[in-house]
Amino acid sequence: MPTRRIYYDDAFVQEFSTSVAAATENAGTWRVVLDQTAFYPTSGGQPNDLGMLGEARVLDVVDTGDEIVHVLDRMVQGNVAGKIDWARRFDHMQQHTGQHLLSAVLTREFGLETVSFHLGEEICTIDLRGAEPGAETLDKAERAANEIIFEDRPVNVKYGTIEEFRALGVRKEVEREGVLRAIGIEGVELQPCGGTHVARTGQIGMIQLRRCTKIRQDWRLEFLCGERVAKAARADYETRRAMAEKLKCGAEEVASMLDKALAERDASFKLSKARGERLAELEAEKIVRETPADANGVRVATRVFEGVEASYVLMLAPAIAAHEKTVALITRRECGHIFFGQGPGVGKDMNALLRKVLGEVGGKGGGTKDFARGALADPAAALKAIELGKRLLCERPET
Image (tube, rainbow, N blue to C red):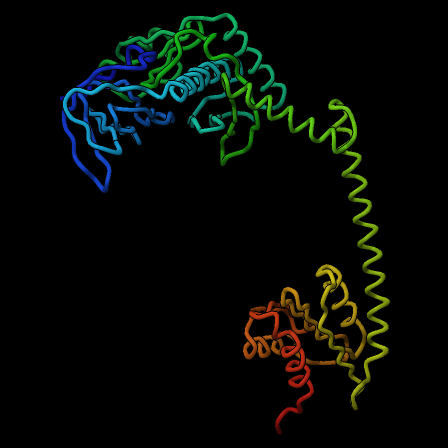
């Protein structure tokens, strides 16, 4: 026997009496079917209700077609009382009715069709199809939706066939036969929907549009309704206030001061990088001068750095290897980074050398004939890896 859905006709029912029609145990939870329920199941982008059935907690609510299955943490029998988690339910009602209103405004005023809806725990989204909704469009849509909210228009449940709804100007048709349930916002919207909704637009509270991003061929618009708008506004204010304190300015000056701070950071970074590169060049020249050449005039400069920034080592290693007939075998002990490089006139294969070393001491890496880099499996093997690399490099090929 189909479950009677109390929420279809009255979404404001918070407590109700019912009887258990069927119950089965499944992996430590109970799946219970009632003769009637006010618990809404996950459907149409709206999450399920939570609450209590007798002494049992409702963990999930599932729509199986004719029946609504309640997943409980314990068994219930006979006649039971149901109690909805009202704060969660009313929040969902605000978001869902707000979505209907917003979708209607975007379709009617800007030709943007809603192709999907998701009601999340913190953010709601609708995916829009059409031209990119710019800042001006979003501002106008938000203002238009909130004007209708402030007019406190009735939100009604209607039943009829798709032909009857079509004659009344349904926003988006659905491929279903028989008698359908629809939600109507006076003078604005009529849309088939099985979800829970507020009774008047004023109960939505307010709509706030957030970020809009490209999702494949559509546009994903984030929005908030009701209490979520107040929470977001408070969080935004606290963030702005904290930024203002750190920047030592007024809240209205945060954006300009942040731009200034970022510009100064970028300039400082460029200056620091230029100084680092120059310092690396000078140290590389010193290292090359202090490294004796072999019989072929090749210098093999080896270093195991400790307490030196990785970014500096990354500049120093190629600076050493840039010198003619010079090989740089460099590691950084803290992280096990290893760099092999050669300058003009050496004629070795740094990639092959690194792979051979890592094959013996452990690690991963690779590169080109002239420059290769990687990471040791054990940073403690840094000195061993360098000594092995130098030995292999200086070995005479077998004849």
